[in-house]
View (cartoon, one colour):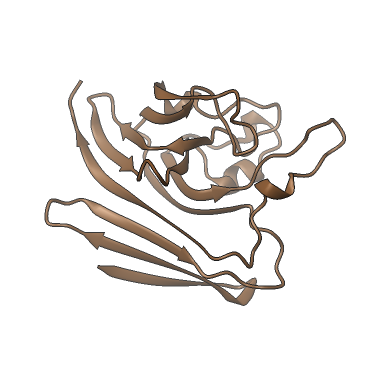
Length: 201
């Protein structure tokens, strides 16, 4: 087991501990723990994010779907197995932005065209949220139009214990309902498993 303790410049009290337990068969168990900190704004998300090569451009989900959904926007989604190229997961909004999230994720596989890649699994009783995108959050934030997005070099994988809702019940910027917000002083943890996916198509 390898443990990393992360500290953040926003506050000396904000710490996140991530423990990676590597088993003999190559499976990696990832456990993230956020202890909470007072006097801070609500969190937008508690997540682990990493990049894979853009060659891993196919996905299969056992989650809520088939379209994007968030904790306050998943009542029309259904639990099932769905597949889609990673390039088709983000929603093509007029202004590039966070999109493509799926809730209730029990399993998601990110593979190349031959079916080789990575599988992320969670406890069905404690599912996670996931987002696969050709772009990082930084790249999306700094593009006002789709043509300003960079060439695709990665598949960006984000695994979240929880992401706040999107709000917007009306056209005047209605805030996220309280039950779908993430208080910064709330202690939280989530875990998932990384496994190789070796099923050629």
